[in-house]
Image (tube, rainbow, N blue to C red; front, top):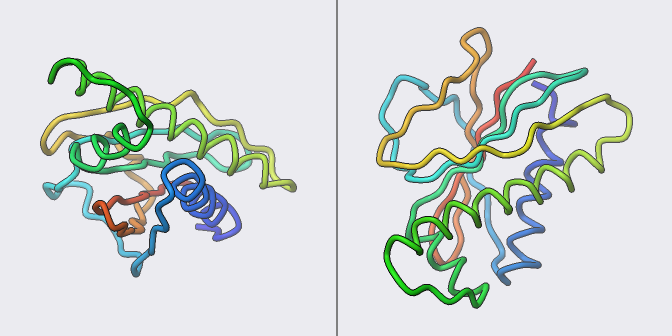
Length: 153
């Protein structure tokens, strides 16, 4: 995998957290994700990539962090059901912002990005491409962890 493609997504994610939520995420060491193992994430924003590179980028987090992001945004919530739907919407929009900023900074490659899809639920599954490894980049913030997972050729 080419860091010239991965890094714009990571930088865009970090910049979005800083500008939108006044949070400075710190990344930890990347690792190869076991796609068959259970995981801790409750919400994943997914992007499909096509063009010179094809694959999937996922922004993954806990409902608690998504709820705190909603609070910082000043969005008023009236019920638990509304909070869950608004959290999914926020993750979708946040993932879309990351994609737009990342792809606009990749100048020398032809890359198209699908609109984000949000998958939620405890230990939800993602159909990762089977022929390529998935690299997970974990992050921490003062309000909780998240992860950016990338898989493409």
